[in-house]
Length: 332
Image (cartoon, rainbow, N blue to C red; front, top):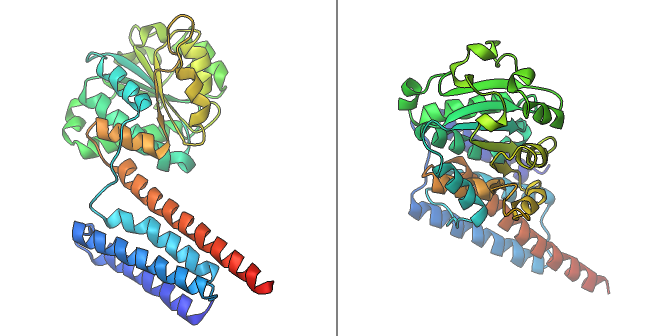
């Protein structure tokens, strides 16, 4: 690494360390400063493009710095991208809105920390909405880390609305049944008996001793199902068994990679019933759901950061092609 590049990296690291340790409150750029930062970043791209056109190519480390800066800067900005609500996300929200207080919602958290940047924000928004609207949440997971991710959503809801900590009680308003191995066979068995798959909750409390689970035997005693999924087992298995076989109304939140596999299930069948009521797809779906629930938080911020990074990558693809054809022309 060249001395200049090393010096630039050290300065960037020191800047963020100073902001983290010595700032009395989170650093936020004003709208004016945010616009100035965007203009400066755009001018930097123009400079790189001109140098490339002149045959003075930049190194890959410079590209890494641009991508890193484009990911970090949006976290300090006070504006967000306009978020348009898609029909799929609207359907999930409308289905939850139709549930009266006291309705039981089965929420399966089928993902791990690697997929949390996409799925955790929508899960947080869902949990806060459920608690604020008096919905009773039965939590479980077909992935080992799922129940822990769910607990993070519960704590996030309490942190954002401290009043919920006093009004929402474990065992009465929500319960975490924990993880159960077996993939789709767990769902199949739950169609007959929840207790058979979860004789105790995450904290080893017997099933029959939990007030919320009184008179909850199987899917017929649940009003709605919500699945947050990063792969298999996940939404596809829940739809094929819980929704299609046991007629449980279901919504889902998926990573952007998995979402295309779930879209076909939102079409109405011969009976006129949708196997999947709606879908929150990727970061954009999470931001849309946050907007509907009036909880614009992580997904909205992450979406801006993601969009900045995408624009930077697109710009460097263009610059790379300019460099390629210029070099090719010089060789000829």
